[in-house]
Image (cartoon, rainbow, N blue to C red; front, side, top):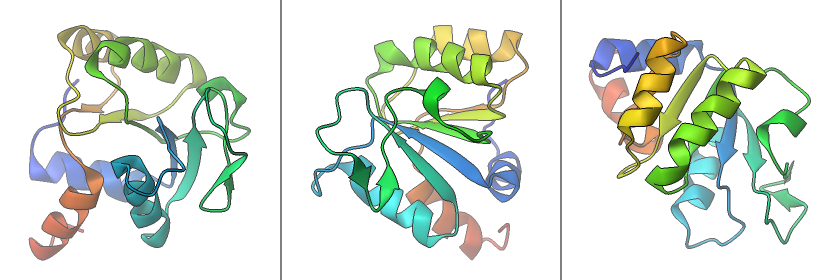
Length: 142
């Protein structure tokens, strides 16, 4: 089920404590690097996921090869991968029992939305929490 309203998105962000960031990069110029830092600074417990990582840590956090390798329950999976990978990541999120999936700007998939809807899994697409959190704070929703 796709979340689209400010209230729905703010509610998800308030309920979320642990985030798996799929597509995390150690490269400082990558959006995932900056967004991960922002989420950590906001108090979220963020777990970077990158099967091709050339480093063991990003922002002092261990890098995991896949969602299933993360040793804690995940509230939200934040996806920094191309749209064609979103259905698979959504399925993986369901398998690990994640409570929501969030896809970054320009990452959209009708198939992923269908998968999430069938699993009653909240899904936010084509948005960035580093943009949404400050905006929702200004609106008094967070």
